Length: 177
Image (cartoon, rainbow, N blue to C red; front, side, top):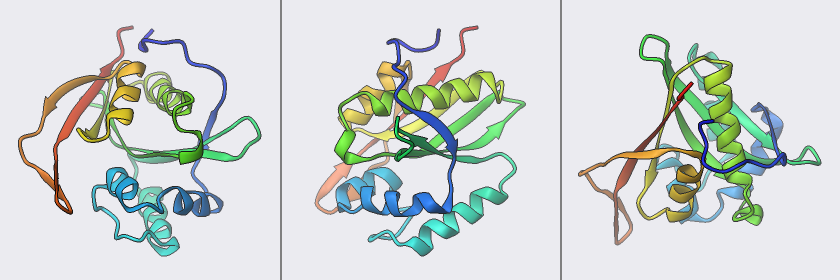
């Protein structure tokens, strides 16, 4: 198996829908969380219009898919994007990973990322998935590590957030099968 810990059956993935937008708006209200989520690819504060444009853009992309993770009751609990699927290099990149802050620390993030990796390996048939995480986002970094991602490099170029300097880790997971 490609992950380090057994995942629980708390979530399911389905395509991102317009009806999910209010959930993401709620999860990204706090500016620091927002910035760690999107690295300024969106403007703060996040708006419905920005998320509609995001959905439209990636719905048109041939090699990208956006997903919502649903909890046991069918309520959105998280979101992520798979993009830049490259079938010659057998890889896909994950981004815009966010969870409902009310359920963080309970294993939901690990399960969502695990399900995304499983989809990438079993459905897309790629051999590698990549993502990027800020060094200041230790919880997310540990989550990805627990699923089986490893650090490839710490980028030298800084990302400036207010009075802080953040750095990015490039991470990857490979299908060992």
